[in-house]
Amino acid sequence: QKEVEQDPGPLSVPEGAIVSLNCTYSNSAFQYFMWYRQYSRKGPELLMYTYSSGNKEDGRFTAQVDKSSKYISLFIRDSQPSDSATYLCAMSLNTGGFKTIFGAGTRLFVKA
Amino acid sequence: DTGVSQNPRHKITKRGQNVTFRCDPISEHNRLYWYRQTLGQGPEFLTYFQNEAQLEKSRLLSDRFSAERPKGSFSTLEIQRTEQGDSAMYLCASSLDQGGNSPLHFGNGTRLTVT
Image (cartoon, rainbow over all chains, first blue to last red; front, side, top):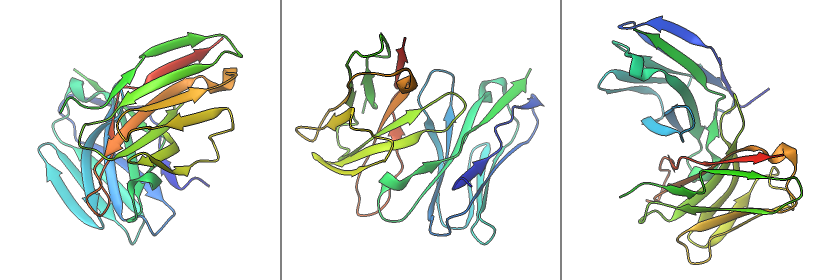
């Protein structure tokens, strides 16, 4: 079993839809949770960075962490064609960034 | 802050040849990481530097791989005697050690194709 599980999709939605992306994990020691967006042939770009459980909102993006369920989510409101990309969840321990573990990524297509 | 820079962007080599990639991190970042990403997968950790010291190496980093960060600034990743299984995107990331965790900032990677 992988430490971080993420449905690879693809997920196809119409423009303006609310998108929900999710990851589950097995290591209860993870404390930091991140979402990255990756366009084709580019490096991952940090979208959201949260510590422990709770919600964090930034513009059209909301990240949720439920440590009791070992489950994290990213919601995208009013999705745009420019949101079409691969979304990677990532998480790490509280003792240095080198143990950042990534999910496999979910491919999202937003149709105009 | 110009971001993390990686060169070359693409490299095609024949099996058995040696290749070297370069990474220039964000200037004030003291941590530097190398990851590898294959198609349809997330980045996998290879190795990590705190300043010039290499502090962690993944079991994915075979003896054919070597990484250096000689002055705590840029880093190089060398692959000797390349194999077709080495074909992947090699990503460099950096972060700032502020006494705790800080998120990784990635470059756009070097795409290696071994023929």
